Image (cartoon, rainbow, N blue to C red; front, side, top):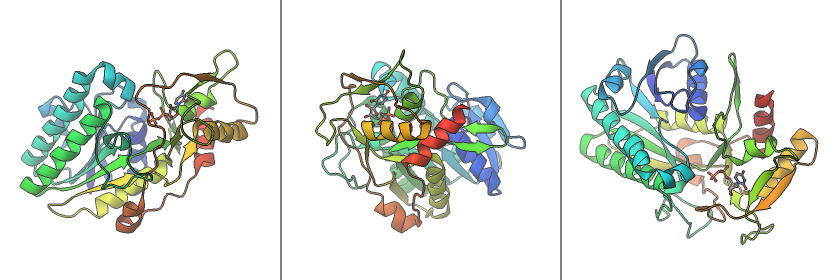
Length: 317
Ligand code: UDP
């Protein structure tokens, strides 16, 4: 089976490429390398350096493909607030082009990287897939628009689809080509920032007055290897004309200070931090209800926060 991995040179996409290849899938990658890294592409993988905004690049990438894992897209909440039109163009229009070209190429299976940002401020914790969707930023709005588009596509065109709503993805995977890890510039994510904290440049803790036990935000972290495992299970379980939505997290929450403590344990010394104002758009608590993925996909995440921190730290070496 040949899988097209869009965004296959990014953090999560390159991890998918590695795991799918090891499992014997044939891989094609479509990535413009705007945020990814071409050096992550393994030998033997078909690599089209091209854009979702260019239909002929997509058509080339879809050659001989049986299914698509669609990771490509803009993914920073803060940037999306500054550049909402760019997020709409790349994420929504790019996916529209992909679905159109899939139809032309009679490719009918897609697993899409959606996000917990589709829910916005939650009414209920843990958050089930049936929760209301009120995204609080343009990034979440684009992911919701795509989920809606895929639902329609599956009803009208009969495609088989799954949207996987990620909570906080962390950790890294060691490959023959070195660690596949977060290489964002600038890095905005908590775990890499905590591990790079120094006395001269301490990690900022965004808010210490949230309505949580220690006053810092609580998030649900899932290891990138567990996350890709869920993608493969979702691909295996696709049903013709059905679009399923699954939350992917661990089902547990960790506060920012608990993550700092886990990182201190891994690194072996106290991590310097500085209390800072709240970050715009942050909800206090996000925890996934992952029962649907457990029951329907037979998926259980097995790697905890300590392993996510340790793998991220090892990837820096
Ligand atoms: N955070 C923080 N300092 C940082 C980066 C993040 O205090 O340098 C907090 C952030 O406010 C949130 C949590 O850590 O509560 C996770 O943030 P991250 O950017 O990693 O993921 P997000 O939840 O935004 O997807």
